[in-house]
Image (cartoon, rainbow, N blue to C red; front, side, top):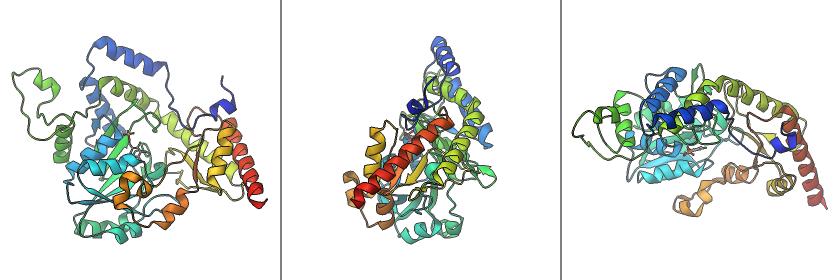
Length: 379
Ligand SMILES: *Cc1c(COP(=O)(O)O)cnc(C)c1O
């Protein structure tokens, strides 16, 4: 058994065990490693889980966003609204299709974009909004939907954090929106690496499958039976390999457990943090959300981060704002809220295998760090 201090030493980690190892071994023994029956079984199981007609599995969350943008017809000259406070992958996917990011403010309470901030940022060049479901929380843009529809602006959900969360009565992905998931090593469900797109209709599903498979019309199974194949357009090699799909299938089978543990852990943090003065918990709407992380806003964040790190606690900063990154300097604009919260956010150790005692350990380390840094400042 690991100690609470050891468990709190990791900011995030997947829960993996013998079943995942056996599934990988089964695929290795089978000798079919590319896109094949294993990936298609995973797609069918994801569709059933979400309650949607179809899901397209791909190699990563980043390429899911890239393909979704292409499938939505976003390209050179277009502008995509995106929160600055997201993983840089969201922005890189926009650049990958030749479009420009236009950075949007987030709510300091949820770290998500809101209808008002989105509408305020729309320009004549806007073709899409990439809504990031920060921490797993569903983003409600219903207040902007009529205007966005009238302007022909597509909403693409970056639901990398939000696998399993609910948006109203439906799971994220089942609301009719064009939704992208990530199954990278630290996400709610992992394939090692992987991702998925929930298309809005059959045409979009066909386009997404073509884009992930080098533009080849036939599936690998169909190709094995004919002497030629047909390439219908641009495509990438972005399929989800069988080994990764096999891990994802096992993870999906144990998801109910992970879902309830993530909620319990978040609530445990919430209870402990309530008594901690000066530290604000970023709300994830835990009744509907499968929390991806536990993020607080702390004064003197950099000092608190260093003090906790020195104590061996796995803290993180999700994320340094993108409009301040050198690569995205061309699209910089003044975003005072993002800049303020960007200097305060701190993620605490959060993974399903950690115990309540590990949460207590992390919270006392935070309490001590905040007190220590306050004394330093007043001295
Ligand atoms: C993880 C993540 C991605 C990218 O997913 P990968 O599977 O790592 O490529 C995109 N957006 C956000 C918000 C993420 O957290």
